[in-house]
Image (cartoon, rainbow, N blue to C red):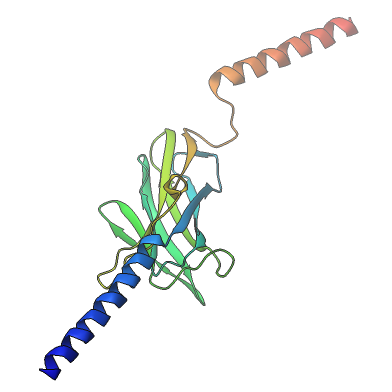
Length: 196
């Protein structure tokens, strides 16, 4: 009889502890933010585009594992993707045309830890607007507790557009070139008239 009572007390204590843990997790939140930038705003077909993706945790809680996901932009070919780790870098995973950069260690708020950074390099393979979109995610692990909720998911996504054209960057297009030549001709004719 005493063993049954003891077992019931232990079960009650476990239930109370688990309940407090779950309630704490429900109230926990971590505001992840993504900042995607390109080192180029205009390129030619065949040129490389280098993206810098920065994932920050604005807090207040830490996140056990975070990831940056970025589909390879249409009109480009992926060259490589790396993430910064202590002492160097390592390759990101490529799955189904999507770049996935995972950091399997806690990311505290920006007041306690540095943001996570990834570099993605592609080659422009077609002219037009090249749109890249990166997303910050908290990874759901198999072991509890679940990741804290994000109070501001609107800043989890960042997009940047790069224009790709035909021919070297900086070379005027046909219309602009025609106006330039016309201006030069008018200038030469004006100078000749002044001399005569």
